[in-house]
Image (tube, rainbow, N blue to C red):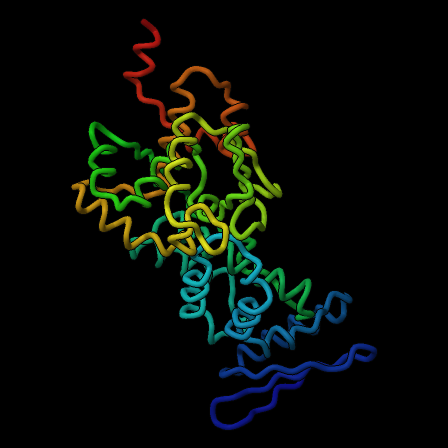
Length: 334
């Protein structure tokens, strides 16, 4: 029989004992909540379904986020992970893992969307929270965890970008780019590579005689789709860019585009260049969309071949990055 013990003016401790299992307790601010918890816990013990949640109740999400930063973050590719963790910490960091419910996560999702955050951003935040719970349960030995994200619907993405270069935007852009930035833009349009892959490209992985460059992902840790590397064919225009790069002072670390350390370090310069060129709403990643679309428009590659160049696992994923202009297709129809 559960015991409810009053502790102070506003605390009620529920204690549940069962032979062979031991006892567990939890404190509430109302007797009603204490009795409800005790009843559920006792029923679980009787069914043999009881799992101690003491670890989950003692550990806050903030503690897990700090451990995640130490254990997992250094091994991750890409950028933006720190900001995702910061947002989760501000919302849930002070709460114990056991007290973060699906209802709270759903409310967080709705509030973020209402504040103007994109569906893509909110999905990434929920995915990050789910990963932390999985690590806590499987690798960090925190028992009694229920992943609150598992039963929360992800927001539908309706913000897929279709931005491509229009009219004279490319010559205007190149006209105001610093020389090394202009070379990076031109090479990106010829290879359809991700910015992080380009900034990690090393001269030892470039073979202009065979016209092939090997992309090994950020810091050589593999490409985004999980492969160790990806070989990209080099057009004559791409080889010309590399020849121009060889005339510039050599890098000390062997990287081809050594002026920037990581993808996020280029964002400020990129915004300034676009502003000077009078170009609005153009992200560097849009050049990958442009390049993939151009590969199709050349009419010399099949879908599988384009996917091999761009590094997409499936044609469905490639389709999201390919935006063919209707007028170009009309010309092909004669």
